[in-house]
Image (cartoon, rainbow, N blue to C red; front, side, top):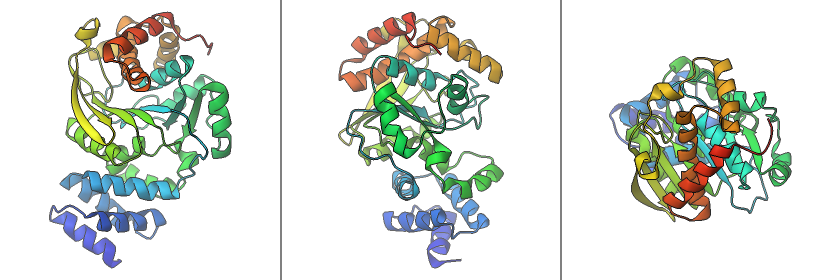
Length: 329
């Protein structure tokens, strides 16, 4: 075991945080493949048990991006909508629907995602069913984005180093630092982002990490009902990240005319139901709770991109969702 790894594990075992230098060094070893599976598992468990810091997550993100296939030459305003997952909600694919609505409205969307891990159907599963390619390469992505206003960046295609770590994460079977890192690793480096977290205790952490990146404006949200997106079930908590500064925000659906709903109203029991739900959502014919949930998150995204108030953006989002997308899937 290298001295870098042994020192990091010793610190974590006593509940101490890693410095920027220590975190950078240990994640460099992790992604280079120099750690054994036991050491990597101990590192991830030690960080989770202690509680990850913004410095540690940011170091992991930097190390992962150094190994990633980044998309070059993007200068336009572009957004990603995603969550950390793992909230166990069994809800329909709201963030994916929001991304497709945004593209249909003319905004450029760089959707980064994967297949299902804890849910019945992940963003990749949904988009594949809708006929959207999962095989877009880094060289093709810019052209696809220009033509379609939407490009899906299938995580395994852009982060080959994660293949070494996947078996360890699977064996641990608990959310780890990588669940937090996932939404921060978009190879198109979005300028704007709506990032959902299912664990309220990491909401500020994720906002702090985003503030350390080049993102211009973002919402980090934790939805009522412990969802990793805004919901119509009650008051939602959020952080607005802008110019490296954090502002706490409370988003009450009632303030924007949304009817109260419950988690059962947006649940899907299996993959076929999830795939059917997304088509109804895109057509504007899904149950009202699902459409309201999409409109809430769409409104948050539009407010970031347009620079308008949430009230103006929510009204724009509601009108669009009531109509459905123009594109046929």
